[in-house]
Amino acid sequence: MSETQTSGTGPARPLPAAEAGFDAVGLARELLRSVRSGALATLDPDGTPFASLVTIATDSDGTPLMLLSRLSAHTRNLLADPRGSLLFSAGGKGDPLAHPRLTVVGRAVPSQDPRARARFLARHPKAKLYADFPDFGFFALEPGAGHLNGGFAKAATLTRAELLLDLAGAEAVVAGEAGAVAHMNADHADALALYAGDAGDGPWRLTGLDPEGMDLIAGERTARVTYPEPVSDMGALRKSLVAMATAARAGGG
Image 1 (cartoon, helix red, strand yellow):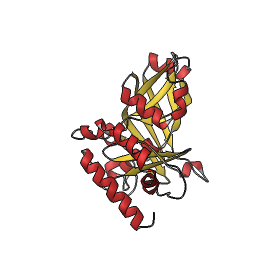
Image 2: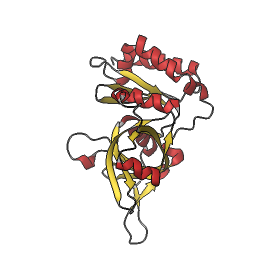
Image 3: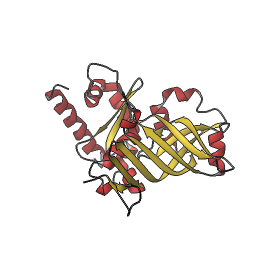
Image 4: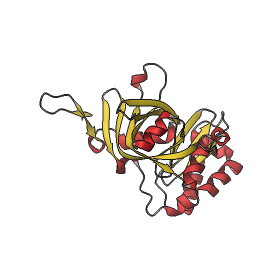
């Protein structure tokens, strides 16, 4: 199946994710969770597009989070017109255009949610140095749609529902996240290395978990690890983590 469609003699257009012929939703969600910085596009007062570099984390459902200074042009633009987009690019060796990237368009709104703050600072610990400066504040980019380029001949469009996790029924996992993260980092560093597939090089640290998977960092490296099946409560999460560690040890990593 082709990953693009044509309309008459017009240019090829990306297919919806459900018709793309590859796991567009899985790849898009991995980029959302694993890329820590990207290009933020906003609109200047005269309508001119303005792009800048920002650091990114995600909320439990995958909503992109940013810590922005109100002294910056992009923040002033968003406060005047919340429309914006974020480019998530995995990067890598060779041709930059051969690697997957995701553009998420939506509306950026200020957030004072304690969970947003905690998840962002876990992902970017150095930001604790300036997070409480009076001109800084957290913003959430509420996605409207996504455009995924998965590499050569792989493109798809995604809806908000395909980009984000539905947390209904998994509230216990969201509520128990902080305790589980602290416990894993304090007592199970060896398991975290196994989950990341990198037992001999680390140390890996868990920055967040959700009903679909967990996010890890080691220095500048990141890893997004999904469970064999989504979980809806802490008991299922514990069983999944134990089974994953056991399988990794049995497989040699």
